[in-house]
Image (cartoon, rainbow, N blue to C red):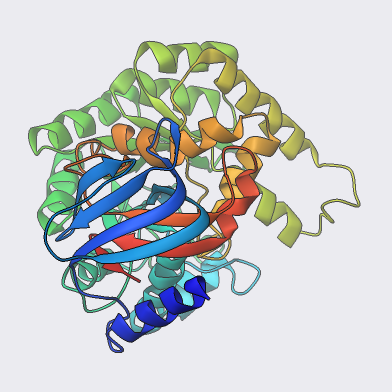
Length: 417
């Protein structure tokens, strides 16, 4: 009965148009608290006006507040999605080419508002987006809409258009006299600085570069920009208080990006023992995006669970294991958008399946991601002074990562969604 009363209480407080309660003072009482690093039985969390005020056992706050009992749950920091595309939807619904070429900006933004809501309700209160994939600077407006409470969604960290080398990116396969809109912004040695500055000026929180792409003679991934060109992007971004991350799947593309000073490598399918060692030496984090490849192969016909794993999956398992053994920092992010928004936990489940311990995965998607994204003083941990981004899960995800799908309570910035 107590749980029913709590649900009714929350629903009665929700603002129908916005989908959340207003900020207030809340004493949250789960069965246990994972603070971003360790588990604590019997802890409570007191939230005051959007900020975590007290954490621990036997909290007795002063003043007026609302108590919310969450029996049987584990409270964790709001999860952080490390690699997403809010303006994409699964490729088995519509191909990437058709999304870029045939869907209007209005349609894509309308979809994105639902994508943001779905990720938030799945327990992801912060989301790093790695490119609008042909939708220009639509992510800037979506971020503003979330910040102003117009639409519900995670707080956004955005890269806007992403940067590609001329001739390397798509869509492909059209006659040479046809001017095709691209999914990113082209740059060369002569205008790299201008492109980086322009994206920062339009609202980019960081810069994404495609250090390689599938433009080899047989469609294989090969490097695009030189090490010097990427370094120039890094230096330009740094002067504006931003950092650079690199899409890189080939050994050489990864090597150039690492030496040039990027902060994260996305995908990294061609990672070797030597490459991951270099990443650790240079303090470059690795975002493996396991779920993207898993999803695409199933779209292409692989019957997961009843058929032998494709070579690409076997090789990805090996490279991920090499990354774990090297001690490189793991950034949890699955390339959500290739598969459904709201299914973000899919990446975390695969990280465990590929050899990472559940507790380490939970650390990665909370305090680990926060540190890599330079936000550890605001999110990713449950301690006084942090933003009140809190999620209650039925069960203990340090023992079974799959219970992260059983979200019972979501608070972002002190508001209950």
